[in-house]
Length: 257
Image 1: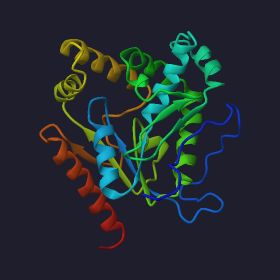
Image 2: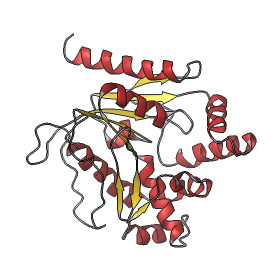
Image 3: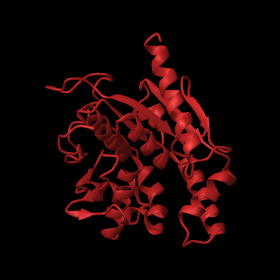
């Protein structure tokens, strides 16, 4: 990692020009565009933890794209907005002052002057995420933010994880991976993470999240050129190793090694 200040994503005023920069183009003054490792997958597949560990091993930055939608859900709830109301979500998005760290060790998410790193993981926020994420203008604007952040990160590479990362956000990334696992395995893992919640409720919530998100993006089918890593029978360390093997193999083939 560099010694420069931690790169962060901040949101310009909604309604500003949202022209998508050309893939592979560098911002003015940038030495080079970071290599992108794009990782997709359903809830409970381990995307965040595996991607972060892989980024640390590679010496890359790490972008949890789902945090942006969680932060917006938190922001909407803080303003008493019904997140199933697309018009209301768009209105509250207008003053959504968002920032996120790309550092693998110094992780933080902020909305305005509030550190919401822990708050966006609360069950009430999780329940509201799909409502804000399915609003098309919001997805378009946030996607543009992700691209600008990565392009200007000043890092050798960034591991970007979330829904539709390999197909919509970074469809031309040199490394694209679909990380998945059997539904029952994903539910068990999520339940183990949320030790204060009933296992049956966690499984039901995960199923509901999958069903809701599947109306917006296809996160269970690998697009052409996307490598699948199925972690159903792998532990955490083995899954990270499998992801790193895909990175090494893909980049080796690209470089003629």
